[in-house]
Image (cartoon, rainbow, N blue to C red; front, side, top):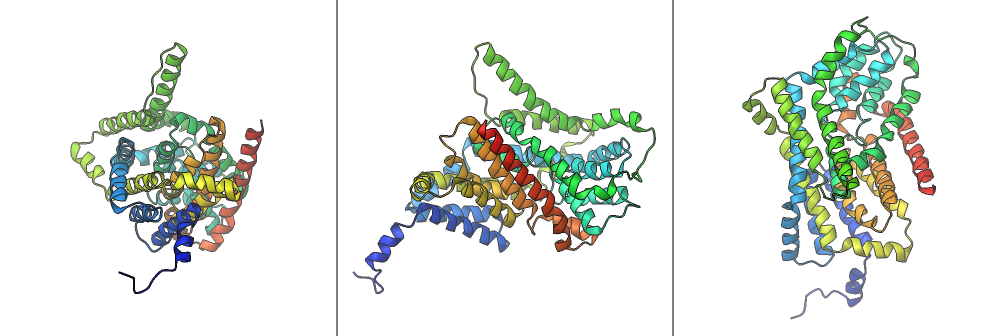
Length: 443
């Protein structure tokens, strides 16, 4: 039986010979377009995974089986558990007032307005939470009282320093997801990424804090610094416990390797143990009850984030199962597509459109990481770092980044005027890091 509208053989051949890279880029564009239309990113990723499977020639049964296996794998479940614990700890520290006490004690340690303006957003930024910049905005405003700072510059200061940890801090879901997809130990990722925080502080100080030099904070507490140092360290103990678990387990593993004992720990185990210890500490120190824990688990932000994790892992599985990644690697060699263009361009565009680290990592790393196969361990980390930083800069410049929007609204600043201050340190970080990575690669 013939079709009423027969498809020309040439069209079928052309369809079959569409490059895999173009197919994946179209599916990638579909994900970003749907997300721009306010479809939740988790749903967008599931749709993108199905689209990749169909376009790469998989049957519905193969696609369904792949989505099920990817979403229920041990890697996915461990990642979901970590993200859930991070959100729970953040919520517990918020509702118990521990976050407020951390900020209050640190303010008493410093006197300089520029220091307070950096530290307040940075301290809030240690605990990832949607729109967290709104918590530090009043503190920044108090610190710069009497200083000649425009509203758009205040917006940029609060927004920029709120995110200086997001390159490597192990409590950020974007970092956890990147480490999981890269299949590297957390400490190695931290080691390569940590200098970016110093670079961001330097760029922010040069371009954003010049008017504050020499100014004193209105939160001057005189000689109270020594009195609050102990309470401050006590309040930040949960955060120190997480970092301590990662460091101790890494040192233990390498000490055992030196003695000839070889064993492999799941890359997620140190962080998982750290978060469990952190949760117990927060519950004990704040005398919280099981109902407080239950309310934190059932917080309205938890389920959407978990669905996002499952969507990301499903998209990653579709790219691998359909062999799209293998074909793309071959096409890049055949068509001589600049590798760095793909490594930098896709995360930047994704970050710009989604406005969230989990968004650019989840949408692009499943495609990029397999392309790094064959690189030396150092080059692997250098390319991963370049991809992450590109996505980060896109995220910081995104007009849909919730922290930028709530900060702008708080200070009643213009979005366009705020961008005039934000793009300068962003460009400085990107260009400087490219030079540094290039120098490391050439050594």
